[in-house]
Length: 453
Ligand SMILES: C[S@@+](CC[C@H](N)C(=O)[O-])C[C@H]1O[C@@H](n2cnc3c(N)ncnc32)[C@H](O)[C@@H]1O
Image (cartoon, rainbow, N blue to C red; front, top):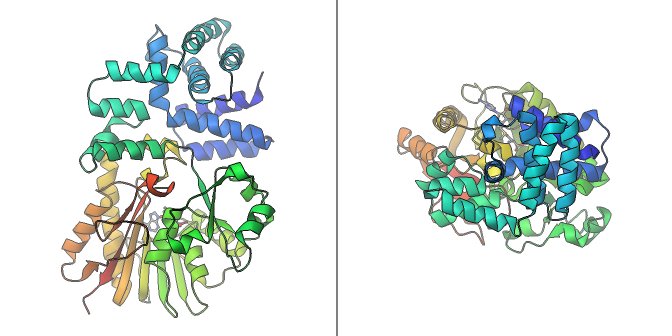
């Protein structure tokens, strides 16, 4: 029996019973076993793909099963989800092998009786030509109402779709869902003074089909990034281990490069800084006389930040553990970068379980938390200084509304500073990075300039 599928099964079983973060469950499993790289990739695609398309797959099961989903044994349900996902979404796997492997796994993980049930459903599904089209038509015909339909088609909880409907056009919502349901791309940042793009591709052994040509990047980023589909050749390379290249999503890079790029001699405070991705980029763009203080509430995550600074041999970042909503500091800063804790919808392509682990109530709580951070941090801003507010989410309550409330609470003290980014059109002074724009995570960023003094 196939070992990879068995490992995928046990990860999914832990996920459905514990609802712990999927990335933690996967990395725990991977570190406890010696799994070949190709198998790891297969397990990733299978497990993340199932969570990415969970509502759609469960709907498909309900088409072919005469037993209601709630009545199906939990292990059997996981096996059906695995089998159907392979049949519907994994083009390289022949349907008969997806069925046979699922049946074998059912004998081990459930019972002989259930293996027959699994066999019957998967065979029924795989006998249909253009299965995806068949399921889509079924949804179209049987599910009433736009919100429910889109929710099922793209496996986003209904509340997220109806929340977005208040702010985005239908067309934009579908684009967002589609982009967030794609397997993630990865941006690798390098320094062309140290290594050329061509040499980097050679040294990393990147195959043509792994490289994504993206012409649309803003100029300061286009020359220092390559984008790849598979990240493992990069993670295992000595260039990465020695800190010569680093992996950072383009939305974070835009926020740092265009909104927070340090000027000579500036003092910069990075709040909610661990594990340090943005602090490292700020430091790389800075001269030696730039002072950077990175603060985070989590000691564990700060340990990771320290490790990262060592790997990149970075010396101009001081570290402090503290709560940004209430911290007391001795100095004032020219720029304060806030990477606010948020619903993280912008990271769904990397972490598809984010779709299901947030509640509508969380949004107001996160907004209030960001307001506390903003209102506390402004005490440490120099006259004419800037607060750069960033989140990795598409959530107007946490983004636009937070900023509007902050501006109203501090009338006459701040303006949203216009920031021009070539090749990116903005209707407002803030920037909402939509995931389909650059094949990236989604996010929000704006620069709040202190105009009081
Ligand atoms: C999105 S992550 C930051 C990622 C980081 N800026 C980077 O670029 O690598 C959010 C961070 O906020 C921290 N955090 C959450 N609440 C906080 C608070 N009240 N004060 C300071 N840090 C906080 C978390 O520990 C977490 O490390």
